[in-house]
Length: 154
Image 1 (cartoon, rainbow, N blue to C red):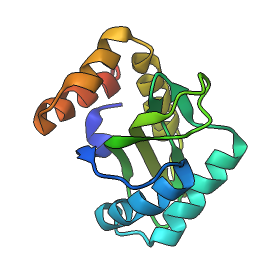
Image 2 (image 1 turned 135 degrees about the vertical axis):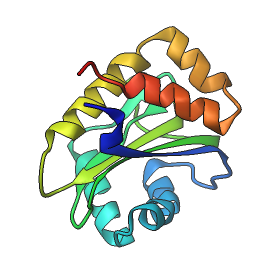
Image 3 (image 1 turned 120 degrees about the vertical axis):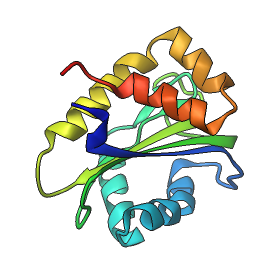
Image 4 (image 1 turned 180 degrees about the horizontal axis):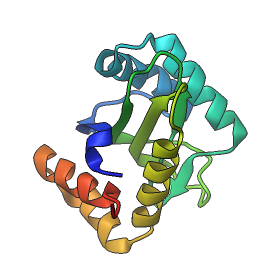
């Protein structure tokens, strides 16, 4: 899957007021809607449906909420580094402060979603990637790092 199959959006040091994931969803869904052109309600519904199945809290301060969104034209990956950690029911019970949101069209090829999610999750287990995600302060460098993490062999 070449990286051109999704749009990447990076926001470092988001000044969030939320302390739990659903409140954070309400905060960030406006940004997601603005970037995708999809109504906030449709994005919120997709994220809540997926989160109700099981937690997307990955552990080590990381979470990967994701969902299939009605009326979405292409796949999107958003990265948010939060100033305030959010309780997420993560596997290690630690709050999350590095959030990767994957949104894909409900209609169409779901393999992009699965490939992107699996590649991202695989690389997030790597301690060196975790360190870099925590330390990179430049938006463009973070974009390059995430693109490297999500690139798949063709």
